[in-house]
Length: 229
Image (tube, rainbow, N blue to C red; front, side, top):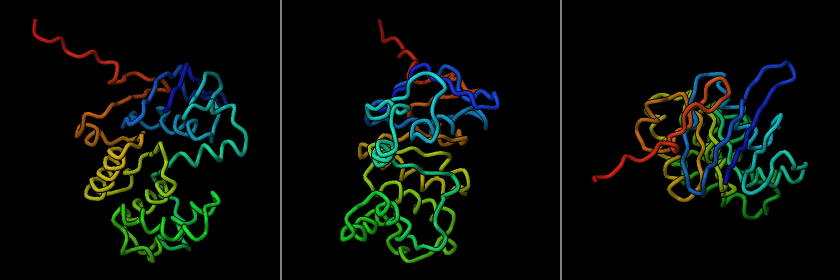
Protein backbone atom coordinates (compact mmCIF):
# COMPACT_ATOMS: atom_id res chain seq x y z
CA UNK A 1 0.00 0.00 0.00
CA UNK A 2 2.85 2.40 0.87
CA UNK A 3 6.49 2.05 -0.15
CA UNK A 4 9.33 4.53 0.31
CA UNK A 5 12.69 3.78 -1.31
CA UNK A 6 15.77 5.84 -0.38
CA UNK A 7 13.74 9.02 0.05
CA UNK A 8 15.54 12.30 0.74
CA UNK A 9 13.90 15.69 1.23
CA UNK A 10 15.85 18.95 1.34
CA UNK A 11 14.08 22.31 1.38
CA UNK A 12 15.23 25.30 -0.73
CA UNK A 13 16.85 26.90 2.35
CA UNK A 14 19.09 23.84 2.69
CA UNK A 15 17.28 22.31 5.66
CA UNK A 16 17.31 18.52 5.44
CA UNK A 17 13.97 16.99 6.46
CA UNK A 18 14.39 13.35 5.39
CA UNK A 19 17.52 11.24 4.97
CA UNK A 20 17.47 7.98 3.01
CA UNK A 21 14.09 6.78 4.31
CA UNK A 22 12.97 3.33 3.16
CA UNK A 23 10.10 1.20 4.44
CA UNK A 24 6.97 -0.62 3.28
CA UNK A 25 3.50 -0.61 4.82
CA UNK A 26 1.37 -3.60 3.85
CA UNK A 27 -2.39 -3.82 3.45
CA UNK A 28 -4.21 -3.80 6.78
CA UNK A 29 -1.31 -2.52 8.92
CA UNK A 30 -1.48 0.02 11.74
CA UNK A 31 1.82 1.90 12.01
CA UNK A 32 2.94 4.44 14.60
CA UNK A 33 5.37 7.08 13.35
CA UNK A 34 7.23 8.45 16.37
CA UNK A 35 10.02 10.93 17.07
CA UNK A 36 10.58 14.39 18.52
CA UNK A 37 9.34 17.57 16.83
CA UNK A 38 11.42 18.19 13.73
CA UNK A 39 12.22 14.50 13.25
CA UNK A 40 10.52 14.48 9.84
CA UNK A 41 7.16 12.84 10.62
CA UNK A 42 4.92 15.54 9.15
CA UNK A 43 7.13 15.96 6.09
CA UNK A 44 6.93 12.24 5.44
CA UNK A 45 3.12 12.29 5.64
CA UNK A 46 3.00 15.27 3.26
CA UNK A 47 4.97 13.25 0.71
CA UNK A 48 2.36 10.49 0.95
CA UNK A 49 -0.52 12.80 0.03
CA UNK A 50 1.52 14.79 -2.50
CA UNK A 51 1.57 18.13 -0.69
CA UNK A 52 5.36 17.95 -1.09
CA UNK A 53 7.70 16.08 -3.44
CA UNK A 54 10.84 14.16 -2.49
CA UNK A 55 14.20 15.62 -3.50
CA UNK A 56 15.25 12.10 -4.50
CA UNK A 57 14.06 8.55 -4.04
CA UNK A 58 10.63 7.09 -4.74
CA UNK A 59 7.33 7.30 -2.87
CA UNK A 60 4.62 4.84 -3.90
CA UNK A 61 1.07 4.94 -2.56
CA UNK A 62 -1.54 2.42 -3.73
CA UNK A 63 0.74 1.49 -6.61
CA UNK A 64 1.29 5.06 -7.82
CA UNK A 65 4.63 6.87 -7.92
CA UNK A 66 3.45 10.02 -6.18
CA UNK A 67 6.03 12.39 -7.67
CA UNK A 68 4.91 11.42 -11.19
CA UNK A 69 1.27 12.39 -10.61
CA UNK A 70 -0.24 15.54 -12.11
CA UNK A 71 -3.24 17.66 -11.03
CA UNK A 72 -6.25 15.39 -11.61
CA UNK A 73 -4.22 12.30 -10.76
CA UNK A 74 -3.25 13.81 -7.39
CA UNK A 75 -6.92 14.56 -6.71
CA UNK A 76 -7.85 10.94 -7.48
CA UNK A 77 -5.11 9.66 -5.18
CA UNK A 78 -6.29 11.89 -2.33
CA UNK A 79 -9.80 10.46 -2.69
CA UNK A 80 -8.28 7.12 -1.71
CA UNK A 81 -6.70 8.68 1.36
CA UNK A 82 -8.15 9.99 4.60
CA UNK A 83 -6.11 12.75 6.26
CA UNK A 84 -6.53 13.84 9.89
CA UNK A 85 -4.69 16.86 11.31
CA UNK A 86 -3.90 17.82 14.89
CA UNK A 87 -5.62 21.22 14.52
CA UNK A 88 -8.88 19.73 13.12
CA UNK A 89 -9.13 22.26 10.22
CA UNK A 90 -12.91 22.46 10.41
CA UNK A 91 -14.91 25.20 8.67
CA UNK A 92 -16.22 27.35 11.52
CA UNK A 93 -19.31 28.55 9.63
CA UNK A 94 -20.52 25.02 8.84
CA UNK A 95 -22.16 22.44 11.06
CA UNK A 96 -20.59 19.07 11.76
CA UNK A 97 -22.70 17.48 9.02
CA UNK A 98 -21.85 20.27 6.58
CA UNK A 99 -18.13 19.91 7.31
CA UNK A 100 -18.31 16.21 6.48
CA UNK A 101 -20.52 16.82 3.45
CA UNK A 102 -18.01 19.34 2.10
CA UNK A 103 -15.45 16.55 1.67
CA UNK A 104 -17.94 14.81 -0.61
CA UNK A 105 -18.93 17.94 -2.50
CA UNK A 106 -15.35 18.72 -3.55
CA UNK A 107 -14.92 15.19 -4.96
CA UNK A 108 -18.06 15.43 -7.08
CA UNK A 109 -20.19 12.94 -5.15
CA UNK A 110 -23.85 12.58 -6.13
CA UNK A 111 -25.78 15.32 -4.37
CA UNK A 112 -28.67 13.04 -3.45
CA UNK A 113 -26.29 10.70 -1.59
CA UNK A 114 -24.24 13.26 0.34
CA UNK A 115 -26.51 13.79 3.36
CA UNK A 116 -26.95 10.08 4.01
CA UNK A 117 -23.21 9.38 3.74
CA UNK A 118 -22.38 12.26 6.08
CA UNK A 119 -24.92 10.99 8.62
CA UNK A 120 -23.51 7.47 8.41
CA UNK A 121 -19.93 8.45 9.25
CA UNK A 122 -21.01 10.86 12.01
CA UNK A 123 -22.86 7.94 13.58
CA UNK A 124 -19.76 5.79 13.10
CA UNK A 125 -17.70 8.22 15.21
CA UNK A 126 -20.44 8.61 17.83
CA UNK A 127 -21.67 12.08 16.86
CA UNK A 128 -25.07 11.43 15.31
CA UNK A 129 -26.66 13.74 17.89
CA UNK A 130 -24.24 16.59 17.14
CA UNK A 131 -24.71 16.76 13.38
CA UNK A 132 -26.22 20.28 13.53
CA UNK A 133 -23.65 21.67 15.98
CA UNK A 134 -21.01 24.17 14.87
CA UNK A 135 -17.35 23.57 15.75
CA UNK A 136 -17.44 26.26 18.49
CA UNK A 137 -20.22 24.26 20.18
CA UNK A 138 -18.15 21.07 20.31
CA UNK A 139 -15.40 19.93 22.66
CA UNK A 140 -11.90 19.32 21.32
CA UNK A 141 -12.51 15.58 21.24
CA UNK A 142 -15.79 16.05 19.39
CA UNK A 143 -14.15 18.37 16.85
CA UNK A 144 -11.49 15.74 16.22
CA UNK A 145 -14.23 13.13 15.69
CA UNK A 146 -15.83 15.40 13.09
CA UNK A 147 -12.43 15.67 11.41
CA UNK A 148 -12.19 11.88 11.48
CA UNK A 149 -15.67 11.54 9.97
CA UNK A 150 -14.66 13.93 7.21
CA UNK A 151 -11.54 11.82 6.54
CA UNK A 152 -13.60 8.61 6.45
CA UNK A 153 -16.53 9.72 4.35
CA UNK A 154 -14.89 8.69 1.06
CA UNK A 155 -14.13 5.18 2.41
CA UNK A 156 -10.34 5.58 2.14
CA UNK A 157 -8.00 2.63 1.76
CA UNK A 158 -5.35 4.50 3.77
CA UNK A 159 -5.80 6.85 6.73
CA UNK A 160 -2.97 9.28 7.55
CA UNK A 161 -3.19 10.89 10.99
CA UNK A 162 -0.76 13.67 11.95
CA UNK A 163 -0.73 13.98 15.76
CA UNK A 164 -4.53 13.45 15.92
CA UNK A 165 -4.55 13.38 19.74
CA UNK A 166 -1.99 16.13 20.32
CA UNK A 167 -4.53 18.75 21.45
CA UNK A 168 -6.83 16.43 23.40
CA UNK A 169 -7.18 15.50 27.06
CA UNK A 170 -6.64 11.93 28.21
CA UNK A 171 -10.26 10.83 27.92
CA UNK A 172 -10.70 12.28 24.43
CA UNK A 173 -7.36 10.77 23.42
CA UNK A 174 -8.53 7.30 24.43
CA UNK A 175 -11.76 7.71 22.48
CA UNK A 176 -10.09 8.93 19.30
CA UNK A 177 -7.42 6.23 19.49
CA UNK A 178 -10.06 3.52 19.91
CA UNK A 179 -11.82 4.82 16.81
CA UNK A 180 -8.57 4.58 14.86
CA UNK A 181 -8.14 1.00 16.06
CA UNK A 182 -11.70 0.16 15.00
CA UNK A 183 -11.13 1.72 11.58
CA UNK A 184 -7.97 -0.35 11.14
CA UNK A 185 -9.80 -3.50 12.24
CA UNK A 186 -12.14 -2.89 9.32
CA UNK A 187 -9.21 -3.20 6.90
CA UNK A 188 -8.04 0.40 6.48
CA UNK A 189 -4.31 1.04 6.67
CA UNK A 190 -3.59 3.58 9.44
CA UNK A 191 -0.35 5.55 9.71
CA UNK A 192 -0.38 7.68 12.85
CA UNK A 193 2.31 10.22 13.71
CA UNK A 194 2.42 10.77 17.46
CA UNK A 195 4.50 12.02 20.38
CA UNK A 196 2.36 10.01 22.82
CA UNK A 197 4.47 7.02 23.77
CA UNK A 198 1.83 5.87 26.27
CA UNK A 199 -0.46 5.17 23.32
CA UNK A 200 2.31 3.34 21.53
CA UNK A 201 2.97 1.12 24.53
CA UNK A 202 -0.71 0.13 24.83
CA UNK A 203 -0.57 -2.03 21.72
CA UNK A 204 1.74 -4.20 19.70
CA UNK A 205 1.29 -2.19 16.52
CA UNK A 206 4.33 -1.61 14.38
CA UNK A 207 6.42 1.41 15.42
CA UNK A 208 8.76 3.40 13.17
CA UNK A 209 10.91 5.92 15.05
CA UNK A 210 12.48 8.88 13.28
CA UNK A 211 15.36 11.10 14.37
CA UNK A 212 16.76 14.04 12.40
CA UNK A 213 15.00 12.88 9.26
CA UNK A 214 16.17 9.25 9.36
CA UNK A 215 14.47 6.03 10.42
CA UNK A 216 16.39 4.84 13.47
CA UNK A 217 14.08 2.01 14.56
CA UNK A 218 11.41 -0.14 12.94
CA UNK A 219 9.82 -2.81 15.10
CA UNK A 220 9.05 -4.82 11.95
CA UNK A 221 12.80 -5.44 11.63
CA UNK A 222 13.02 -7.17 15.00
CA UNK A 223 13.77 -10.84 14.60
CA UNK A 224 11.43 -13.17 16.50
CA UNK A 225 12.87 -14.85 19.53
CA UNK A 226 14.16 -18.36 18.79
CA UNK A 227 11.87 -21.18 19.86
CA UNK A 228 12.82 -24.04 22.16
CA UNK A 229 15.54 -26.28 20.85
